[in-house]
Length: 494
Image (tube, rainbow, N blue to C red; front, side):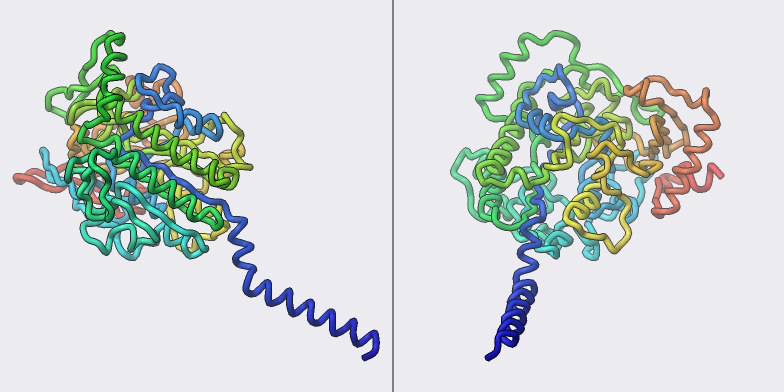
């Protein structure tokens, strides 16, 4: 064999080896570069319920606050709806819940002066979830906690893109067994905890185990707490801690908030002092800390995106009135800021500057496109959200408006209504009678001064855009009751 032939043969064999390696090992090498993802979704946690947003917070959240200091805190972050299931739908799909009439918690059908809009109480099976999208990219996927997006197993997490589901089914709270303490008697918690085990800690342990088991490949862990939703139950030691702390908190605990037009004012908490709720918040924070510690000990923290948010505002006007959202107005079930403005923290190693803040308005519809973009996935179907990755570097998002549509009478006293935010302005529209309010959030975050009469052109422009959006998403509105017809924004405002 001559020398030139030997060299040619060697080159050919090397090319063949490299080609085989690329064909069979390339996807693994590519997957190794993908960022891991952990999402914390806390049920009913208000914007003012964490120290990072509220220096005078009665509740102690050191782990969440530390997460904020290690990433970016969004000061104008929102949920897509003032109650849970619609926001959960938006987080999973990147779409406004009004597109499929998933506009109230599943299945809330309270009537008032009029009947509510038609409600779909399932996330449609043809929706593509972020879990399915990431799984298609090679991610191991995990869900723990509250789901509340369908009433039968075909709608549960394990059939919507998650490899593992711990505790997610149709119920909106831990209403079985000993509720927040074992035995949980949750059909999707297959191995029961020892008696007295605490649900937030159990879910955190399961999440930590999944992280360590999958540390050598890309993973997506979605820890969706049942906390701090009712029933109001806390660890006894933490409840005692906050009872003592509350002894040093003075001031009026309750005030009043407007009710639906013509009804009596609604009682609202105006001081954070509820010891049981405080215990629930701290237990959630401890669970977050356990998962963050696992990221460090598994050696994957530097390649893991962490997102922390809530599904609606803090519960301030009903069911025990456990928290205060001031200076934000209203709370869960209201389209005022207290019902829709949320804690939003994103830590993206290599993208976020530790301790940074953003005033870019973002929403739960943005989670799907953000996570897809982080994994290099191009979404091939329509979504309403945008990737917020540019905002992580201080850039502005090219989006003109955010919208809300809640054509229901909330359990918490909130009125049926819609809203639009453009820049610093927010317009609120009531569906019973068409009354409108305009607020300058930059100077009036508490929505105490209606400037609609001072800015009629702004009202006209924003209202037209809101009504255009109603048409785009085929929004539904209040229905006739007892022979009376409600105001309809697509008819009566023409």
